[in-house]
Image (tube, rainbow, N blue to C red; front, side, top):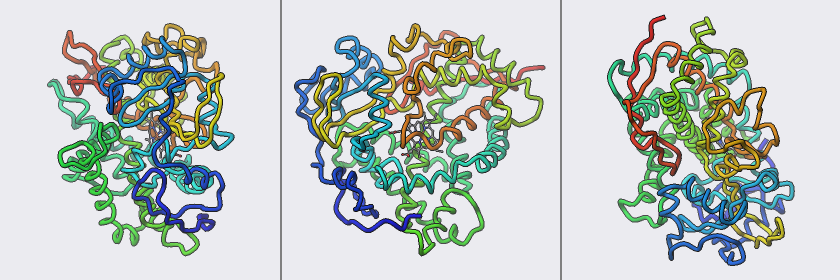
Length: 477
Ligand code: HEM
């Protein structure tokens, strides 16, 4: 339970308006809290560009983040610094560094400090906690992702996604990204908050978009009109929206994530406050919503490009004779799995996993001073020429049982991260994606305009630049 916590009202080094309970007896947390709020930026001994005053290399990153990373990797090797969006970070692009940072055996890497920019928006959600504090909260949240709960989600997702796909326009072009996003938000609201959104769906979606855009805003000043201002407004809106549901939820019999945590917060033994429940719920919805939208958009965009794979997946999915897809059916879908993994390798929704080191350390002969932003660059790991054959080629067969390129090392393929903060929604994301593909591909053919060029924008997450206009046609069997 959460009873070991005591209240600590000191401001966190992230400067977030964080007033939650903290375990003050944990020496690693105390060391993290004692660090200056601003990260160390004295990194002249580390290779990498200085970039422009104030904005560093933000423009290069916005223009073409993968190209910029590949250029730095080619020039400097697997450790380089880069400045952008208000801070300078050291990027680590090899397996050993990923293992060291994510396994975090010496408790030297803080997620709360690493994701400080997000902490200023999302306060004390699970990703923004470290060490014993994180462990205690994670244990509680994991209840929402146990096998029986996932099976229940799968049953409900089959019904919701089937209806959703059937309601999309047929034989006429529409923006796939817009429709998908609102369908997935409706899923998440109903499964995690027991809420049917109806007309509110659009408004909530807008605030989630604002929140996501704020994570890569160039300035963090609350000036009206800026993306930071809109993101902060979005957070307040989402928190208020949840607060307004509390009275009704606490007295309901529903068993969704939000209601379950709220009831737990009422237990005198528990020290999870209502504030923390709200923080966890906003972060969960945020972590779930855009990552899955990005993944499914990338999958559909690439299925329109590689039409032979659309046929392969359709044939595989049509072998399931039932009208819904269960978790047990997944083992019959090796090709769907390969395609899913190759999309996540090529277009990982989380480009870099952010951490900050608490103490100085040395890696490959390079001294990294304390309080430095030390990021695991997932995109670079996924394109490292020592780990992948023709890494820039889109090739789902690399994940086949025969080739299994991803099995050389556990820290080579990390779309869902690794270690203590490994994605809580990994199974949920897989279930939602495969069920959507099941209802889409076995009944319909998806295409884009002939001659359309596949182009992605990569920040804040990979998404087709044009919103992915598609046409869906029923197939005759
Ligand atoms: C394809 C979709 C997804 C991808 C690629 C993805 C990726 C990730 C990654 C890389 C992390 C680790 C971040 C870090 O260590 O700093 C993470 C954490 C997390 N993800 Fe996901 N995610 C996805 C979907 C979801 C979904 C659907 C949910 C919820 C239903 C979710 C909830 C979370 C949470 C709560 C964390 C923080 C865990 C912790 O700090 O202990 N994610 N995700």
